[in-house]
Image (tube, rainbow, N blue to C red; front, side, top):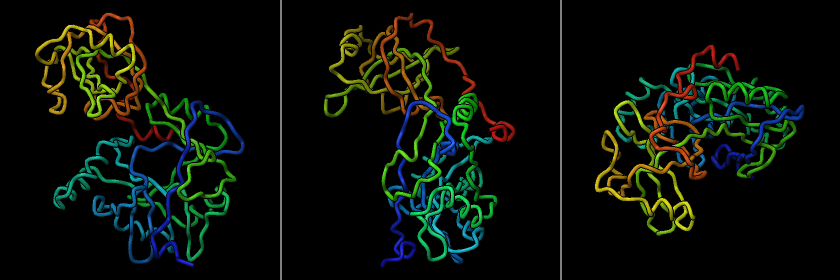
Length: 329
């Protein structure tokens, strides 16, 4: 039988999704982190990090190269690489690391915005596969195996009270929570309802400033804005099907030759079909990015509101968190 550590062939268990938080004596709850999901293969001499797509990523996060020194035996850990701004993870820094190739730049970023590997589970310890053991037992083994350090941490666990936990992370503007059954085995590569993510979706209204037609001519990308102190501010894009009645109304709006923003929008939208900024749409989204654009936007509906009323604010959801905020979770 092939040793899963030697072959580096383990696959992370996948997470299903549900809409509403819940309380349960049969579950524990964890913070949904905004980072890079990885399996860490750790032994006495080396750290190997492999992401969900099977890519080795340690070269992008050299500050994590010594985390194997903080486990007491050969093991495979499931976890997330996060980069914090204050005490809140910042996925924009993770994305930046994934595309940078220059070692000097990577080393600079690792000093300026150091990463942490947060372990959430253990699949293998010593020479034993642990996937058939219940989560409750695996977590005990995980805490016996891992010693926390500057770049290696253990996920904090909340028993039973998922509703209250979700209320607190929502107030802090965090991404969501994960619910896990205490009796669940580790199902490698399988999406199971034993693990459920509950996302903290945000919602806001935006002005339609233009649109672009996708390559297959089946969807449009609406270009969104809100009014700031100096005029319209670009806020990102959201996809909309061309066959929807809403798009027929959007497409019928008077056009203009140039974009309506106070500052030039990103290069990738400069060939858009620009419209008179009059219609308003409601969009759900995961969070604001570091440059105040929408992450994972989801079109909801046209809204009967004057475009002049759609102003940008600095929402509480994106303020920098403190360690005290996080400790209060």
